[in-house]
Length: 487
Ligand code: NOJ
Image (cartoon, rainbow, N blue to C red; front, side):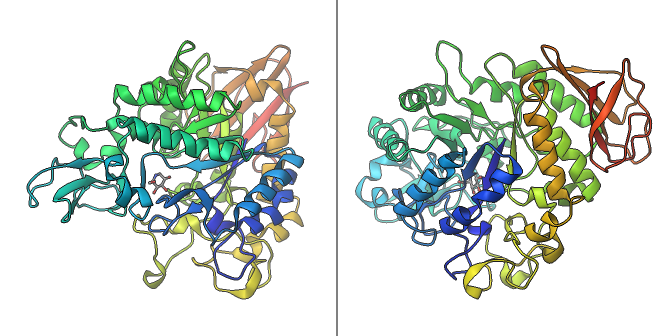
């Protein structure tokens, strides 16, 4: 189980209103109590924050807003002592235009000659409806930006870019980090031979770029990681599981250790859709291609908000933790947080993602455990006092305790951690499956319908955990899930 921390929103200890590394260090015990194995930090490198850290201006330093390199070293040491692995976010597709390379090593970027009035192709930037190209008057050339104009795309067909970016990995690996989440890493191979995209795909090149050269580059990156025994989880934003599978490489030429597979993230609360998504994973992510699952992250509305109720959010968490693969949990999900309502005058993200980035409430009192008394950079999520970690720790029926039991159930069962997956017969609204590892077995029933369902089972099973605290196989409440173990 990997726990994603969006550092800006986790906990402020310096009175800036923005979370920092000290805030994470102060709450590592929360992660340990919850039962996670690894923590992934969204970007902490130096950044002008046009995209809140996904626009890096120095890959070898911590942004002062978050702390110092010494703070990071302290965090890694404390996390390791607590049995947690540390993964950093690595942004290889683009840098901030404030990175010194942009002025000093312009050949590191994707430039195209042309007419200042006509962009080189029809690609559209990710957070707007303008072209993914910006005209540079001094060079009289266009540069590519799949995201904001402040995020210039690197040209990985230049071997010096490859070497420089490998060095950025080694910088952090030498400091003891255990691996990286790699931002839109499937796009890095587009290089100078910009791929032709079908009409329509140009509106969202980030979810369409899929070129062979990226695989060559990933093999090289894998070599850097393997020398340290480190791991990678790639953000492969292709909404097609068969394509995602290719980014794991082959046993002879391995690429990513893990890849995100977002069709599940985008699935509505509908058993038919989930069944299809799960089948795609069972078909394509086999052998060394170990699946991942994610319900929420810093780019999409939280699943509690998308699915519309706490009951559904808890039942969905059962799916997250019991499907075959590694689950990723976005900080605050374990509190059942909803997205914040962000008034127009507090909007800060050009991509409209502020709601899911609301600060985490640690305590019930005003300020919610954020130090320094500054107003946080975004409004608090709804019911912040009741949803706070302290309030929920005091209530064993809370969603927080439920997540802890869920992670313990996974931890205690080889079948749930790494067993095989097989569907069992159930009513159409119920996802029902068996996980098996040697003699260990678990049955999981998730009712995505609104009505009570009954599932007939072969053999004797008892409820290990119910998302609503009371459901059984013969009376599975609407939007409830159970984990069953053999008696
Ligand atoms: C994906 C990240 O998750 C998102 O937050 C960011 O804006 C883009 N990549 C660009 O780096």
